[in-house]
Length: 335
Image (cartoon, rainbow, N blue to C red; front, side, top):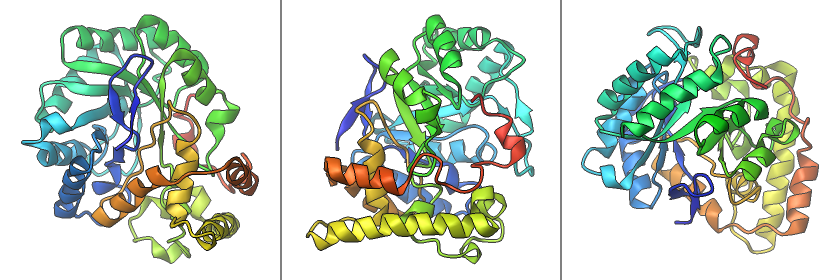
């Protein structure tokens, strides 16, 4: 396993982490036994960065991760998040609450569900526009001083917010959606700002919510309760236009295979993300061991300058059709 640091002087984590959200939420039927097996296989293979959040489920994903790492705690670097507010039975968060008094409550609840004594990386899931970021991060820093949290992170915030937070307490990681078809962090500056500040950049959905694997060919491939059925990029003409983008990626993967290099479409997409910098630590999600092992093989894929240029040309920054979230969720982003 290759390892990369969280922050300039932070702890080392596996160069590819494991996103656990889809094991409990949003992507069709659950398979808890298979998900536990996937997490435990990841740990066996050297993947230590496990990513969850209190809102996934809600709550049940943290419990699942806690079950999977029981007896294996020393192998896992556990990242979880707080801030989004969601009730059981609701399909989407209804807002953000990151008041200082809530930070401690959420942390205690996550520790209990995970069955651990310290969270390795604690993220603010979304910016609370009614609370100064300095107040929220100040409360999070208290948890670090008390030993309940090891490192702090932020998710989907702007460069300005990151800089303000970093001035209060070192931020180890910034998590944002990033892939060949979601390149806003380049245009908005987060990717470069993280390198400049010594902050790890953690892309979630580096496979475009599964679309960049090439395995999705029609909207009916999604289960009836799959989140992607209502996501703009997977609907109507957007779906067809984005499918044409994926065909370019498939062609580039085939060209690499024709040169005798074993690579799948998914591995090529992940290799591009990994090549964006030594501070980049993607967290592709899956609940299946086979997909996990395929993703990890991307660490062995090398890309020449010409191949990187070909991928950039196939997926220019604004190539994807449709917004990456529905309007209510877009409003929660700090762009």
